Image (tube, rainbow, N blue to C red; front, side, top):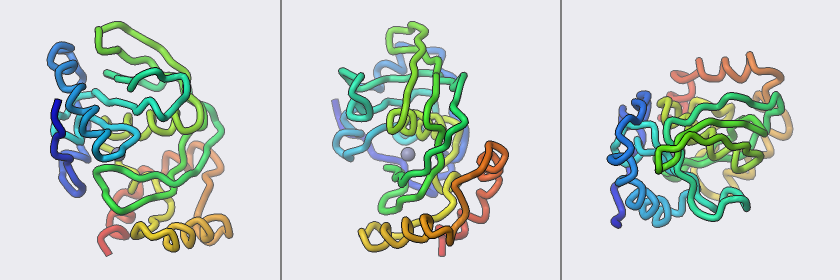
Length: 199
Ligand SMILES: [Zn+2]
């Protein structure tokens, strides 16, 4: 196993959709190195596109949920059911070091995916587990947290994060989204949010 180089924003590949996995033998071979890379970067999940392989494969750290006995490998995952309740929490991304965003996510989801042995699986996830899976599936679709956020929190100091959270709680920034239409509209804001990040 070896640690791989992480692809860092604004690498264009991070904003392109990954292709469906058809060769499970090739996909499975990536997993040990992805686990090493995730662990050494202290990440809670990692998508193949973040190590330069644009295929629909991601791993979720077992720390994301107590039901997980080992790191979860999800191949060609699809959300087939999502709760209307949206939770907005702070999120980071290994490909956007030093930045965190407040990101709205479905509280509960159900997904279909293929496991490393090529078997079709289904699972239910809630809270942090659901959040990590949604983050990783976004990577597979070429979507980053800077497109999902309603408020960029700059830097990584506790003071900056506290200020961002205070703004959000005091209603000085938009959200939480009232409905799915607003949530989906957040995806249209790529350009605006990108420019906020660059400033
Ligand atoms: Zn990420």
